[in-house]
Length: 402
Image (cartoon, rainbow, N blue to C red; front, top):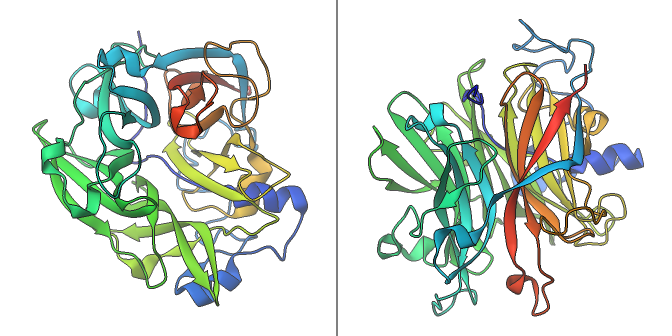
């Protein structure tokens, strides 16, 4: 079997506001106004700001030069990748928020999914009913099935005040031949998150880095990080979700920071990509990786209808661009559904209906024809609320248009 590729001048992460902007044709619905009040700069919705969208440093050897880099994602090409039951520990209830790492990246001959797991036996005062912590899961195949380790990668005995309520939404990065990172949402209380990091060298134990991205004034929570390394620029890009103030109004957006090092991201580089209002909804969980065959950056993200968004209620979107920080309109023009949620063809993978398909992971590239994404599927109805739903990780195969 050919090993899957994911050139790790890459990684997870990005946007959704683009989809609504493109669907509505609302050129005034730009995040530029938010930038001035939030203390961050904002990307113009019609301009890349870094490179033309019809060309990039990846053009050499590009196999889709005519804007035909789109994917077709058939829901029938979906398999179970990971269930919490694989750990054999009843207290591990549901798995979600995943990020893959190839056997070449980790260097142990196995494929990995770093994944958030609900611990139903944990009842920490001041935290959620159940807390989520990052576990490692392994498989001999990129599609799985994966088997999850019964213990989290960060022992619970090593939790500090800033991550006592959760080590969630992991993002994996191989920085060099010796060093790997995991970035995560560190929860000190429900909905109070900071972006923190772990590092290991030469395959040893993970060590804590602490907070790697301090919030700006007015930001009360940061979560769902995704970090990539762009070999063309030498920069590391941190995508994350945060709130910020626009005058007296609190809004949410996807924000990107840049750094020339992987262990610290200065807030001075913050750029707001999108905000949401009652007409736009809540857009979240960025994912990004560089396609080594087509030479483009592939994005995936949740588009949620929490605020009544009509265009993309509870949908997974996949799209692409030639640069890691593209224009919003470029992403909108290239976007499509990653996994259609309404069908009832495989209830063992997820229940039909929007809201039962969510939480994407970065793409892998098993061969020149296929692109492999991961997503979370809800397989039992949440009769007792969202935290009682049974969730598993599924693998969706998409195929290139040739």
